[in-house]
Length: 196
Image (cartoon, rainbow, N blue to C red; front, side, top):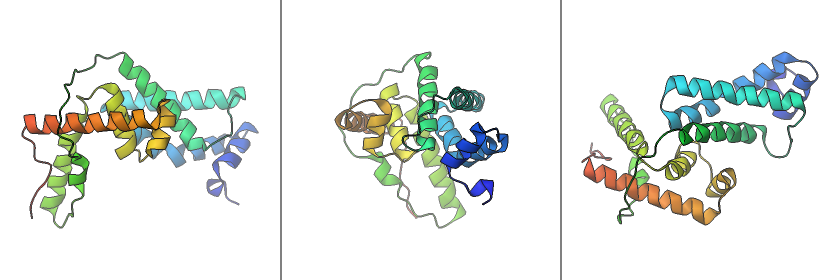
């Protein structure tokens, strides 16, 4: 069986037995998902590059020390390391205060658009860019749950486990994130829909 078709568990086993190529394969296998998550949160390529590198340095050190626990998926463990490093990064930055709103319409519901032309694609890209800009103004906890849900694709159960909170807390943070995004949309008169 070719090495690049092996599962993560077998690749880790081979790496720990001295096969350095196995580590390269496993990093290449998951780098897009891990890097996308980091970049979507920090919005800075240099910072994302540093955190991505630090993530895999920590992965390598943990594997070499024999401290890696094989329970659960390898990629989830790597994502947790990346997530914790991202949180550490944001702890060093100031938070932007956001007041609460009472309009509960989920702005993400408006993003189910059908792209039929180059113009439509450009409009949708602009909508997503505006939305990502607004996400930057959310408190860290709300921003975190929103990104894990809509960009990483985690369930609320997974988010709760990832962030060490109850499902209700994760849901609450998501609700307030949506309320705050909606308020920011209205204050900045940004349209999150378009007509054909």
